[in-house]
Image 1 (spheres, rainbow, N blue to C red):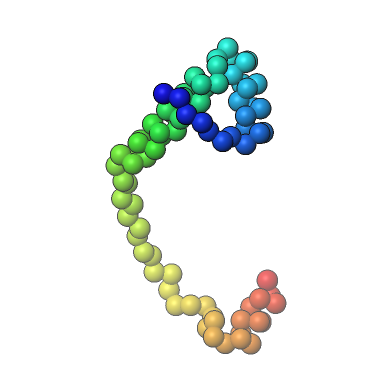
Image 2 (spheres, rainbow, N blue to C red):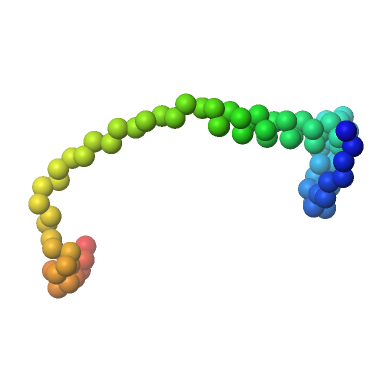
Length: 79
């Protein structure tokens, strides 16, 4: 199938260099790139989701009341 694409000049230039270096024509290069991109998309959409269990741990009582600005200032000055 033939179509027209608008490709930014820097990308087009890089693609031409790459295609020449790898002995490909631009049509094959772009078809390969699009195929790979769509395959990655399919893989991401079909990957099983991993459920992570987050365990909470008690850290005890707070060492300082964050609402007490003076106490907070003293602790920050000590650091």
